[in-house]
Amino acid sequence: MENWKNIQSSIAGLNIGQSANKIAKGFNSSVQATKERLGQVAPNEITELPQEYKDLEARVDALYNAHTTVLKITKVYATETYDYPSAIQESITEMSTSIGYGITNFAATNLKGTSIPAPAAVTPPEKQHKTLPHALGRAATQAANGLQAVGGGDGGKFGKTLGLYAGVWDKIAVARVEHDETVKTQFLAAWQTTLSTSIAVAMKARQAVRNSRLELDAAKQSQKTASPARQEQARLEVENAEDDLVQKTEVAITLMKTVLDNPEPIKNLNELAKAQLLYFSAAAEALASAQGEMEDLSIAAEGEYRKSRDH
Image (tube, rainbow, N blue to C red; front, side):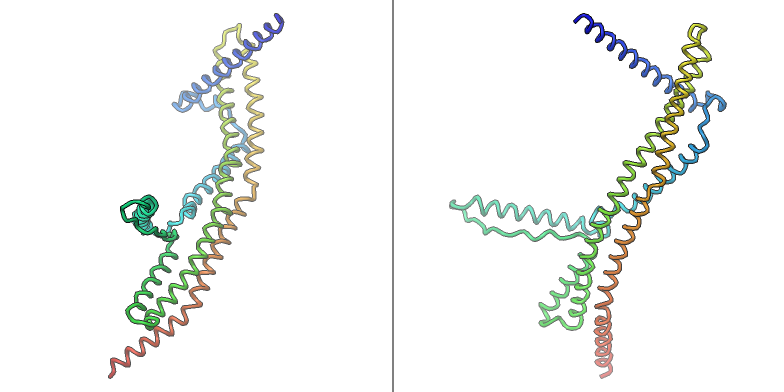
């Protein structure tokens, strides 16, 4: 039992010593970084990293910037209302309506069996998509229905044209929802994963190299001012720091090469372009299918108008 206590005490002492050494290294590195930032360290006293490493750093930075630049714009596809500003006002109106339905249904349920007349329960309207194609389809449908209500039949040529236009945008709206879902799953999620995994790992490895390089240069500075009794210890600390920097640099180079060779970003961009092609093709097809008939109606209406004016 006594031996076990001694072992525990020794381990505790070792852990404390390692922690203290780690804290000291961190402090020295921080001081070194501050001195370099303030220009208090001569350029020739800063350890030069391999050219291969510096070239890879520049390429990884460019890759990171490319990802963030494209993501900054394409992330709008994750929000359905990106092309329809009026959605905000519509949502406020719908929320008020929804509260009204909730109160009515609450009263219908809770006033049963009382002397107070209970209103009939009502069914709230279905949730509407808030996109420009959906809004155009709804607006054209509403306009066509309004014409039919007062004019009878199909609302004349104008009502029929509005109906055709509404049908076009109803089809495009379906394609738009499919487009957005594909972009979110096949592009945005994958693009963000690359940023948060392989690129992030490479960046972390680079930070480890920077910290190691600062520790080495701090150790070199300490060696210069070390007392004769501590010279050997200071020399060993520099050697260990050099070995650590070499190791971490090699790891970082491997990781940076891996992320630069990764084919996923090209695949992701292709998926984005494919989704957009399918959407715009569907939109063009829907418009083409109805535009000819709309043009015939337009020509016929203009002919009738001119004929009426001639009499």
